[in-house]
Length: 153
Image (cartoon, rainbow, N blue to C red; front, side):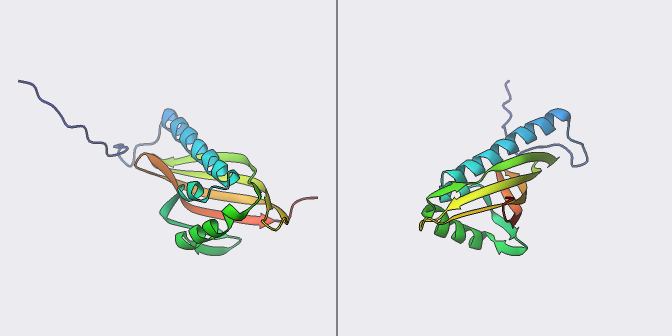
């Protein structure tokens, strides 16, 4: 008699109190770094839908101290990103820290340059914090904080 056991994918089945191994941390760090770079590339490509695809439905952020909901961020991205002539997000100093089997914290700095449809170029720099959460097979941003400052001359 043969028994067939059903394969059920339920994510990470590790007990909640079991620490991550070094291999777990490397895997999470690599995956989230890749997702962060893909998010940057979506912005550089001025592809609003691809950028929005990195945001969880319950995403929210603080942008220069002002809280914005998922819906308001999505509306802003759709309203503006496709109208830019040029967008250079310039992520640097990207650091990923695995917080658990399905969560990671990313901190980075940026130097952005945006050329609007009217030809005006705006430059600024700042710091961003992203909280990524694994949802099924995907890593999505659930929280962001970005602070913008004038560029250093």
